[in-house]
Amino acid sequence: MSEVRELLTETARRAGRFLESLPGRHVAASRDAGELVPALGGALPRNGMPASEILARLDEIGGQGVVASAGPRYFGFVTGGVLPASLAASWLAAAWDQNAFSEVSSPTGAAVERVAMRWVLEILGLPADAGAAFVTGATMANFTALAAARRAVLLAHGHDVDRDGLGTAPRITVVVGEQAHATLFKALGMIGLGRERVVRVPADEQGRMRVDALPILTGPAIVCTQAGNVNSGAFDPVGEVCDAVRAGDVRVHVDGAFGLWARASGRLAELAAGVERADSWATDAHKWLNVPYDSGLAIVRDAGMLRGAMSVQADYLPDRASRDPFEFTPETSRRMRGLEVWAAVASLGRDGLEELVERNCRQARRFAAGLRDAGCEILNDVVLNQVLVAFGDDRATTEVIRGVQREGTCWCGGTQWNGRAAMRISVSSWATTDDDVERSLAAILRVADAVRGPASTEG
Ligand SMILES: *Cc1c(COP(=O)(O)O)cnc(C)c1O
Image (cartoon, rainbow, N blue to C red; front, side, top):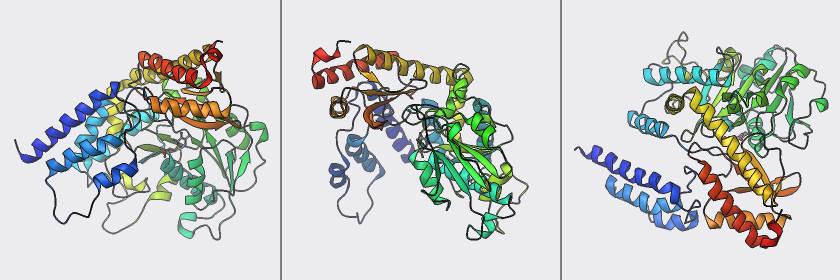
């Protein structure tokens, strides 16, 4: 066996052992970053180390600071695991080391992205001729789609913002829901529209934008809606928003980082009805599609606007007739990110993805029912894969969250919801079985009993 093959075989052996350990592993990491730095650090090495030694050191030391988020009982943030086919595709892509910026540099890279895009658009029920870009996540997908929206609404007023900048541009009104994701504001800041120079539309008790509270828009405007509130899972009424603001110089954008995937399910698609009428969409693949980090998609109805905002000219670059990825993405040189999406969709198929989304939602409802039966307070309508639960006052809830994380059967994070501390359970992994949910539920209730005293869990 060649040396590199031996190294990769050893890597596969170690990675396989890690994945096999996931179902029984303490979910939280056993070392924090502060402890790992000295172990991994020391002085800058003068001489290189053999690759096999590097691998062993990483596995043995680095492995201690790994969170079992790829495992079946990680319910923190909205995370998702990694499908085996997608992981394997990622390894192969890393070995290929393709620069997926253009068709010339990687025919496979360009082809795989085109197919993966077509599949994703069909799954999400979005226009087949939309422009799309594989980016690093929903933050960058929001950034990319909003740059296209900025171009479109200013072109409607005769201003080419990508050529002439914002300085002399008409002022764009940016409308966001009160419950918009924190990263949306960052994306707005990065494209020069400002994190704070926004009109905030009040939300209802589930976090949905209130259409009756939308401002009257005059002049160029971008309305940012949300499909899937990161806490409650609720959807803004995107179709109604589109009806309310329709105009040539207004664009409606949807941040659907995880919620957009509800459209993979016939039963859940209703939640996201009307979303297809928006002008652009941002979503993640590394959340509910269960591909490795980092992976998101920016989708823009008018592909020309995306291309206009992202394309570059240089003498050595391929001619414009082609559909090169770099004309649609903020990055130029980049890895073959689409391959992992392609592999995930190929491995699940339409039905498999529907089953995954519906199973996770059913599991979220089971969490909610089990917790409610034990006297805990469910704070949201569990319409999707998100559950918000309180265990009494804020102090008790915070203590339960800390206790659950320490206990290690599962991992759930905390949040604030309508002014109260809440534990947040997000079910989004292909690996989560019904048994994992029962084990986690039992562990959460054991911790809650210890915090509140067992008597208080009786109904
Ligand atoms: C996760 C999330 C984001 C940010 O996505 P990243 O992939 O972390 O960049 C944005 N919006 C919503 C609604 C999210 O859930």
